[in-house]
Length: 314
Image 1: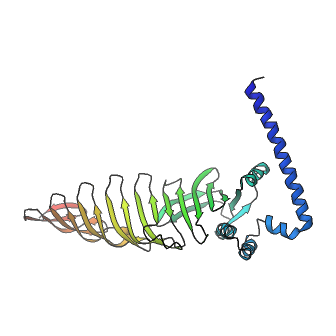
Image 2: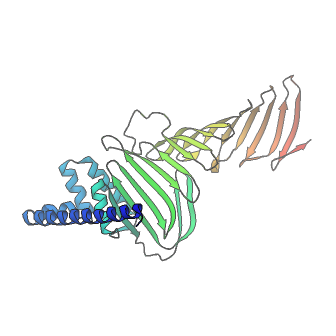
Image 3: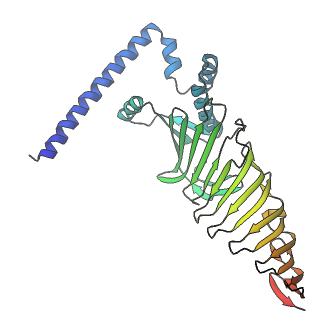
């Protein structure tokens, strides 16, 4: 017999014996505890009674367990129901590693749903015919990972990481559909030291948006960085780009303009070329329209118009 195969078989037999011993010991311990204090065991192992457990945890003063249960409650409020589908041997492994793994199914009673998900004004997926949505949740210490599926198809992953005292947490969302990653630091705004940009949106093409937020809603200064090195500095107001912005081009050009409705340029714009020339234009819903003026660095001025983004000479 091949030596490696023989070693593998012996290892497999040994693993089965160890797993059986652990299983038997755990069952015996569980039975003993049940005989002495059945109510205590129910409170410890009853994963279904989430609301009661949160109250118990708050009374016991365990912030980690309270935070974990509160995050799981959110899934239930969104219409997901916990189901016990994890194989026995995997549950034993979870206990040995200190990790909890739960499975949820969508109980909204829609056989086929045109599903969409948007966060921080970014569409992570939309108009998907979701037929069999499930969620697998991994919980360990101060981290929770939620993986959303439609059957075997991955939709998105949400990673939650609590801060030191569990008063707030960071949230990272990745969409397998749009390939976008959104990270929000200190979701509940409890860490006052995070007084600068505390969120970032990362796109598949390398573009990023760094932003500030309050309770997961984008407000305040932001910077959009493009793969070629260009940058736009602007402000978010309730998840929308509003007011004056400035774009810095890698070649030394820069443009000052305003964002209006629908996150588009609206109103007067002044473009400063690196060579000293200046162009004054007007945007309407993101498109150049109306009179424009080009001022050369030597003082000469040229007047013309834009129509639907195209320059028209007078």
